[in-house]
Amino acid sequence: MKNNISVALWTLTVKEVRRFMRIWVQTLVPPAVTMSLYFVIFGSLIGPRIGTMDGFDYIQFMIPGLIMMSVITNSYNNVVSSFYGIKFQKSIEELLISPMPNWSILLGFVLGGVARGVMIGFIVYGVSLLFYPSFTIVNPLLTLFVLFLTAILFSLMGFINAVFADSFDDISIIPTFILTPLIYLGGVFYSINILPEVWRSISMANPMLYVVNTFREGMLGVSDVSIMFSLGMILGFIGLLTGACLYLLNKGTGIRE
Image (cartoon, rainbow, N blue to C red):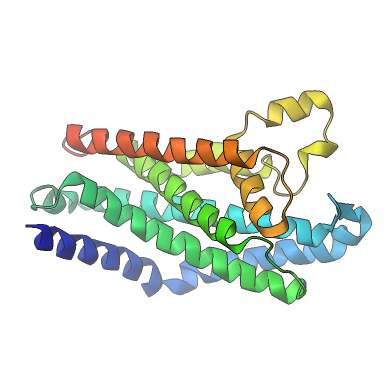
């Protein structure tokens, strides 16, 4: 039985990876092009006018934030589009009647989102070296750890969005009106230390701030927030969302209706 579950999980994961690799021109190339434009406009053109941020060249300060932005959006979008796609095509029923337990179904989709998110993270990092060749990572282990945790977290969020989505419009509402604004206001382009006290306090309520700053701590060695608290928050949300996803799968919310 365990072997059957392992084979089914491997098959689902491979299917998810092949799904975005098959259309790599649409899934892997656009983030590289978009981030190149960010580096040209904000790093090379505007950056010299800004000067330094937390003691780093502005383009160097931006690199961790732009990588995180790419990882978040791509891991989220991969799962939400894939799971809603099988709901729309009614092929979800084949998974539900299979001997696969719900946890392995969830894990298969999450691993697909993590694979795409991490791959995009490495691609954007490679692009950043073209604009800032002397960039070095201070703490590689922490950087990779946060990279994988972030991809897992937002893959789970994408799964929940897909469960409740009733149309293709529903899978774009949260990324457009909630996720993107929170990312931009989460310290991708600036340190919250430059904000007035009121806005700094408001920024502390933004969960993206902790993700971006923990990753920046790994890459640059600086952060606006407590790293241990941030890691605890990320791990806590992963546990909470995993429980929520399994509950929704077991209940059949948005699937068996």
